[in-house]
Image 1 (cartoon, rainbow, N blue to C red):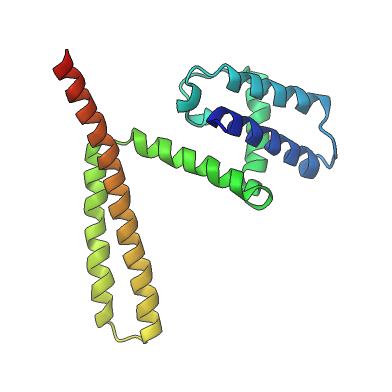
Image 2 (cartoon, rainbow, N blue to C red):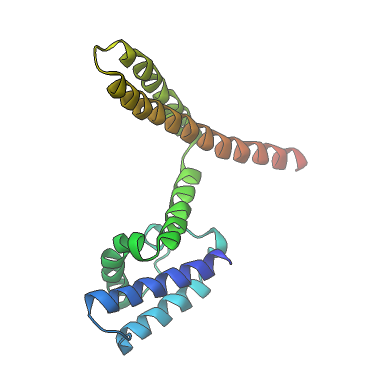
Amino acid sequence: MTRIEQEKRIVRKMIELYCLHHLHQDTMPDEYLHLADFACRRLDHCTYGEQKSACKDCPTHCYAPKEREAIREVMRWAGPRMIWYAPKDAFIHFFHIVKHWLQSLSFRTGVIVLLCCIPFYILSFAQMLLPTSVAAKGILWTILFGLAKTCQYGGLTILGVEGYKRLKNKLKKKKE
């Protein structure tokens, strides 16, 4: 299933959820059917295609003002509730947002994030010297070490994506 098809399915599901729980109607009213069709048409004609970001972060606003306000209202209400009603779709959507965000970060940001993991590593081992119970030390170590690993992997991901882009540009310049 392509990214656009997933987005269409998620938008329709959000509008259905909004109508069912917020408006207390089993079927979608004509206004919301029109909104769902409009959103799907916009996704079909998206200039960014499979590389699109979340619509709220998009530099091109392709929604009419009336529809934009309506879809914002639906997404504000249904977005957080998607975790309960469609966790798989919510996770996929969140994954795409985080992936796009990581790709937009610079090389310097990757270095900074990578360097941020050092204090967490130091704290995770230094807390073993605290006069607390073994269970508390284990919990603290798990949290701090987890934060350190998260920073490390985040920094390496950014560096990897940015490094790949730099290498690709260098190879492109050599060919020219």
